[in-house]
Length: 390
Image (cartoon, rainbow, N blue to C red):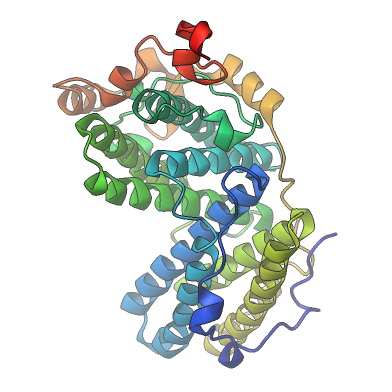
């Protein structure tokens, strides 16, 4: 069922503040709950984080929006805390890294298949293969450092395969830029897809960059640093697709629509009744926030919100394994890179990218070291090498 943001009213913004009890929920079961419940948690925590980043950026740029932004930012913070509290402390940092990568792969693949603009679909597919390789590296490290099978987290929904090697993903900053979409003609669906993936990449960059400081193993710290750097590239990649002519208020409205659209998808697919009730509450709040921002757009810019966000949004994200599509993309697009705002064979990479890669890998590559000779097998690498001990 498609979501109509204009017919539903939602809870008014002034009634949306959560109390401390509501902000801290009982976590999911790491092993017993469905992996896609965790995927939804990761997706929505990323969108809530991105809402805060957007709100602060808009406040710096436009004084007339400061009061409204402050009100909604406080609510977004509370929502983000409530969503993140669902991930329990029994998840190790590497298990959380796997969860983030599974979300990026499965959601990215689902959106890529529904994206109407080929330039955006190709960006989704390009980053998808890089996330797939990150998952493989994290799985190898989890096996070798913690003695755990990554499939306990992934639950067989997502393949553990080497893809475009992480060591070859390091590119000069300007080579991650793409030609932006045209805001006068692009569909709302494409804008929502870009915002979802930008939120995910930004969240992973921050999570991995901060997690390293709490780790004792230097190889773990180095791998988290390497992947955090690539996530900054991915954030740049998706951010560059946004037309810079969009105003802060237009972007704010689009982000509220993206949050509501994704919460609606969570409601449609969630099987755990306790978590579904939270998704329903958060959807109700986002609809209220959407109407609040739509009112600002009308009064401050004299615009009809339906010019940006149509009455009926696209069908909900189909949370489920996208294995066959991912394998197809891996076969067909593994050898690509980016240069001069277009996708090229690796042989055509810029000299600036080659020089950058030589600098960051001057003393070796953590992503290569952690997965040297690794092939995933059920029960961990030790069980495969010593079956009698399994």
